[in-house]
Image 1 (cartoon, rainbow, N blue to C red):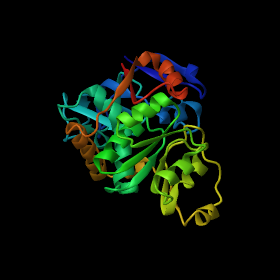
Image 2 (tube, rainbow, N blue to C red):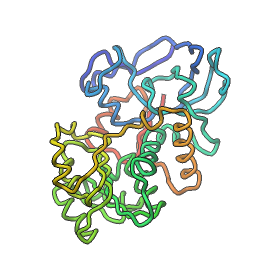
Image 3 (cartoon, rainbow, N blue to C red):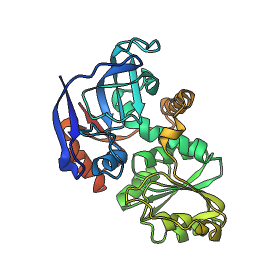
Length: 323
């Protein structure tokens, strides 16, 4: 038997139950992992509450983890027992053991620990596609990053600075502002009420070419108002709730703007893209250009406490759950 956090219905943190589950068997194209660490992400909250529909119930939530291969399916030739691997985007992470499609995991370099790998796969690969593909950040760009002291935010601040960009980090407290600045944000703004005015001041009235917004409903309009003509709004999360329906003529009125709602799943759907995204991330982490900050750890059985901390904005950086 294995152990897992499962939900039997949608709801608050109390619906997550630590219970015995049968240890799964890998199918022909799958591998069985003994998980050493699982990452905590806001998408876990979305599945728990029902904002994102569960494929079935009961459900083991969790989209990210790292561990050791303990068994491989009959058709798997690229991995073997003992390999250190990590993944992001495959639901079922809040468990001591799990099966996963072999083409969805990547080998982890020896220099990167399981905890670091579990903390960075979803958040780090999200930062990679946002900064390198959704909008290709260039030296000299000024960009706006919401939730700049969060897991994705701290990675983006460091990585964007490494790329030669100026980061305006949006945060909720002075403590988080200091953390964002320590990780590469050149400017910080607390709250979004005066965000557009501050961005216009910082950019001499020009606005920015891109805003990365993971907050959603509360910040959507303020984000659009930061953009230069032909600017891109990348709305990649909804920590404050989903963005309500939008009249797209607002994009014309505010400067022929672009709006995208990207997901990591699309950007890593092809195996070659997954490997390229992960390897780019491993490279900047191994070089020290991006430091992954595991600022909270919880036993996996206490995942509910981790969710409460995340939803109440008590966390910074990455949180890892340890089976």
